[in-house]
Image (cartoon, rainbow, N blue to C red; front, side, top):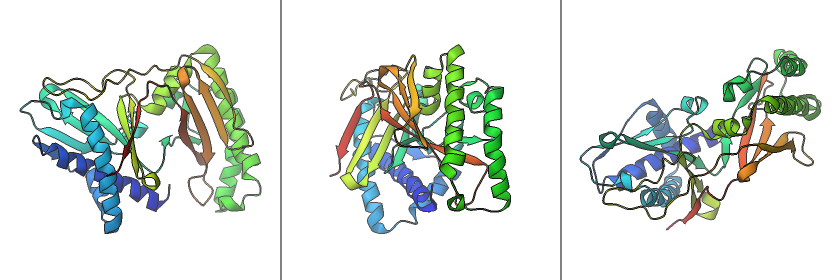
Length: 316
């Protein structure tokens, strides 16, 4: 991710956090926890032009209004103070993809929001010569065959790294790196799936261990999309006096992998199809201009169950 897009992402988180605070404060006492993640987001916000800030505010307000309609407990009766906080990116590595938390300690309740600006990525996981993705993702260690398959690929990258080679100068990075690494990854998933049903665990890893809303600002369409990932039924609870605008269904996790294949005419992307409507792509790529002995996945959802409700909120 470039510095600019990283700054834009943090700035959009800042806009969403502050817009939530402003709208909630019209009805109840709320405060923002000004932690180090907040300060980093504030610095990113201050790099924007005033015209950009206005776009982010309008986008954030569209999403906030929908969240408030779906979550009556935010504004429901109660004497306690409501807390808002930004989580660090480390939480995403640990299985919590939520960027913004909305917390009411008086009723022991919280919900979270994953905030995205102009992109739909689910996860940015790494593959490297010492990283056991199976163990890290869902607790099943990778086989000796996997380690043997990836060793020559990363040995090659180590040599090029020592020469300070740029990725663009590799003679054939798709055939020499991307494709053999994806084949090893694919074959390992197939092996693991033979003795353990990894479908559910894999999606739980990709989407995190907590239910959440995803708020995606799409500037080109002047739309903010709100998606509900109500996998455990913890979202959209009724309040004592306030009622939800619609009832969100509980989404079903997959029970089996249907297919895992290369995307047609691609050497760097796998397509994963599971039952119950779940579909993902895994695109592998280098994360910097210089050769490193690790690569990143850009994981995107390309299909999801109808029980994942998606609402397009037009900007006003």
